[in-house]
Image 1 (cartoon, rainbow, N blue to C red):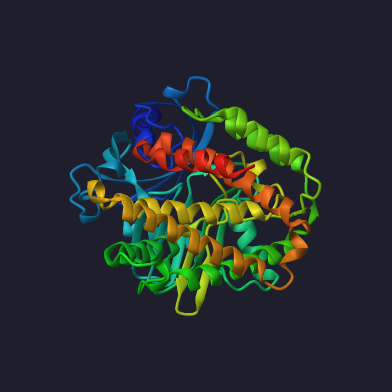
Image 2: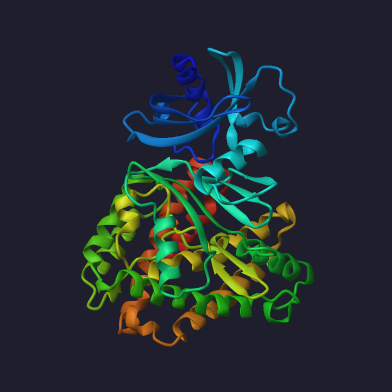
Length: 447
């Protein structure tokens, strides 16, 4: 038995250090234990699943969220290699009925990661576990370069969209996702998901940065650079359209509701502090969306679509992580919406990649490089959209009128940039000018 009062105190300091915690830069969290369950006991190490309701002190009246923490327990003084260089994974020393123990994130412990996998898929025989880190809203571990487990951190009752959508797409024959292997779902919560691991794959954002570095080094038109990304962007557009058609088959399509879309955008706008932005013009664009003549159908979508959520292998592009934007309510993430929301997210990602690669030059980023960044973004945006719109059948899930399609996409691009400002304010304040600049540019480009 663990000292639960001491565990609450330790978790109050541990949670704000985690990237997946939604408390921003708070120094401590208000924590209440929901449950503590032993998944492996007996010989060391011990494995616990802890569910906590937590709110950051810095957020005053912020909504309480439920988090999953998997704890490993070993005797104090254990000298384990996997603990070296990972101070953020240490929860602290706690008293138990077996003496004082060191509590830490079990996902970094190869033995306990395998124990978690066997809890979900007891028939899977694996020898090695490789921790991928927790830099995103969840935590991933690879087993024998064959399987990958995603451990969901912020929980919500009901099906997690990543598990739900991946399974549904496979059932309707969309093959550009990693095959699901096992799920850990109990008490109306999805706790983890195991998929086939895509061997030799590289995420789209990394490939885009390679293309941009080559371009900036050569200082030539993007089409002449050895790492031209336009073909990959076009193929990704095709896969994206096929994904949306698969989602329409799996979940159906309903008439678009631009009033609901605009309500969601206004709610997101209210959650973000937009210093130096003409928010009246933002409201005006959202108002134009409300009264649009042809919004097109609504379907289930990816919901957090960007270059980091796609992976290219030797046989093509694969789409990953259908959980949606973690800072949005689960109900909103599962609600059918325009496929152009995903198109807007990917287009925004081209801008991010160009700007991130430009920042690598620091003070040496002259006007020529800035122009090349804009040219690369434009070329790949055009290629992606052309691949998307050129896919057979995609018009069935889009507005029939071209002007309405452009307006819907512009509204979702603006909404995405607003979301990005809020995300960067909480996680990477030094990057907040990237989406803020995009908002200015989108407002200037929209008549």
